[in-house]
Amino acid sequence: MTSSNSPETPSRQQSHFDRIPTEKSAVKRAVDKPVSPPSPEDDADAQREKNEARDRQRLDRERQVKRYQVASMAYIGAMLRDPEAVSAVWEQVIFKWLEGKLSGYDESQSFRTYLKTVLRNEVFAYGRGQKREREAGPRRMDSTYDQPDALEATASIAFDRKLQDTVIDRALLAVQQEDTIYYEALRILMQAVASEQKSPKSRELAAMLSEIGGTTISEDNARQIKKRARQMFSRKIIDQVGQFIDSTDLDKIEKALRDWNLIAYCEKALQERRDK
Image: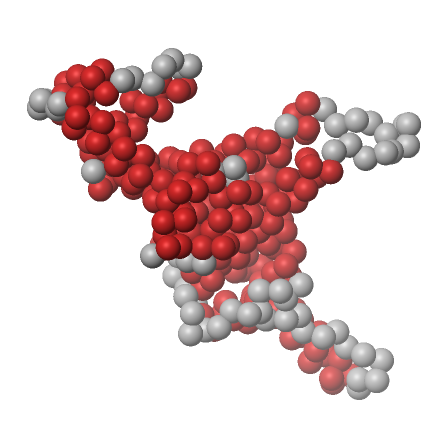
């Protein structure tokens, strides 16, 4: 059991990466490939040295896994928001960590940035796996096999929706930070869709925006605002997906957009960005 002064106690674990002090040499030791076990050909001294090295590596790994666990699960949770999925992804990260598959970390890099990339990649891998299972449909199983319950059957759909919601929320926030009136226009339009009402006409939108902003907005201005707000929203979705997958490659971004059923929001904007 760790002592109350140990850096591994829950009270010292941080939920934000930026607050975790990074000891690059210790981290590098913790993510290196596994130390080889002693072989029968080794003499007693060599076997002892290898066992001691394995013990040190195990302690290094446990220390760093505990140090980053809370922040990592919070980071995964921001994308998935499903406790079971978060645990599954984090367990896979730990498995790869212990297998030495994070040994590509270079001390010249920021470990926090490196780990965030690893976490994102595992979230996307989890999503692709869920999607493949959904598309494959039910498999022929022995008659004694228990069918999955409704919650399990809809888990992959919920995963996709959470990713969509997260990207859309962040894109809306980015629009709001850049242009408040565009954000308000989008909010009005999206509320109409959510409530299964007809989208407000330009005249109605002008009245709503005038009331919100305390200024007079004409019907023509409202029409332009609606058009430009949608264009900005499309661009922000592309930007957010690029940040999620940590890439500016438009082919990779397009693949992610299609995987997450977001391409309908921004196919035209994506083509315009390619043309530039």
